[in-house]
Image 1 (cartoon, rainbow, N blue to C red):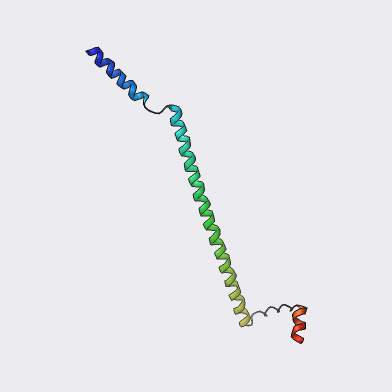
Image 2 (spheres, rainbow, N blue to C red):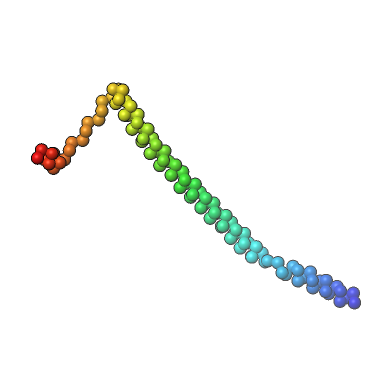
Length: 98
């Protein structure tokens, strides 16, 4: 009876160790996990860059408006001369004469 119990215990231990993943499977899982993490980080960085570009565009537009306002204030205060008006096209000038 002791031999039978010993054989069953050895069989159970062998069965438990053989059920786990092999070393190749463990390594493949580690590689897959690291690839997923790298892909996720790349997506986050791309989204952050997209947001930064959008902010830069808005700031450039705001600066352009602020510069335009400052220019108009300078003209009103007679600190600078107003810009010359662009010449009208000849066709428009002829229609105005008629």
